[in-house]
Length: 100
Image (tube, rainbow, N blue to C red; front, side, top):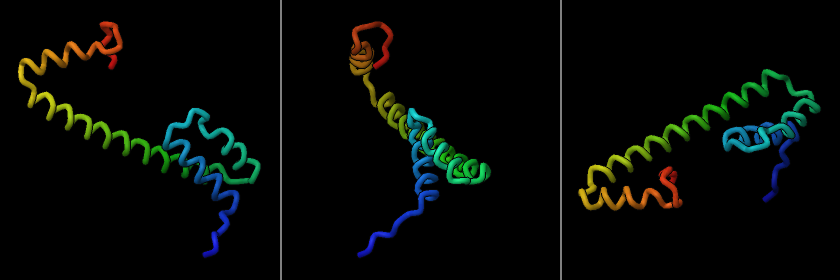
């Protein structure tokens, strides 16, 4: 099977989209520079960014909804003894911040 070659513009747009959706710490700067050098229209880049942000927000929303469901199920099934154990272990990092 022959592997198709993706043109540089498409590859840079895909990479930028993935970086934005994944909240990459580089903010896609390298890809933005590459796209500018390749002469890609700002409107095209903005469309890709909009799509990537939508994907990121949808994933975040679904993750939060699943987390809320787990939390609700955990809390409604907790007995008083279990609730006490949860509050004690909530200080797992050794502080009273309950960050864990």
